[in-house]
Length: 146
Image 1 (cartoon, rainbow, N blue to C red):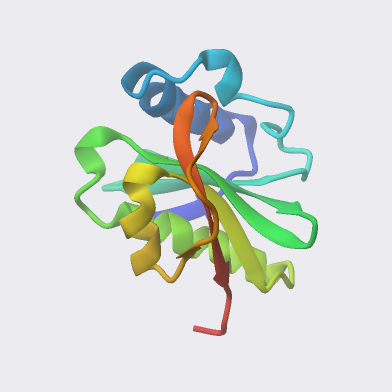
Image 2: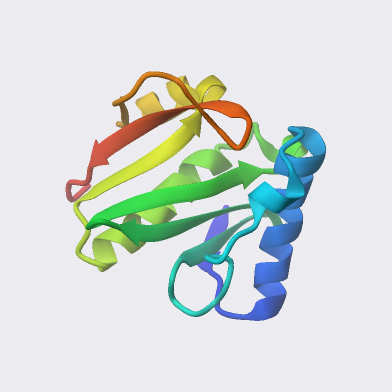
């Protein structure tokens, strides 16, 4: 299970294809809600790919928002969700945040993933809210040197 920062357009296209398959085709989110102005390689966000047997199967991104790291667009292709790759995505994004001297991160997690994030040290910090048409919660974690 490897992960890497995305630095070239071809890899960013792979991440977009994964996001489209998971969020738009599988979960029914609107295509126009999935992609935004942060989906570039201009430094506004750090994007990653996660691999299983050298195949790109997951992605996520990190933005800095008001001195917090914000983990976003975290997803894994359905056949690969049983291999612990979600944890790899989160840990990789947290490490990028640490490299940027960020000590606190947040995410808007889908409600069905709340338990997953709690196991990784995130605490629920809001009531359920609707984002892009689906139920989400705000979750926060203080990063410590692990």
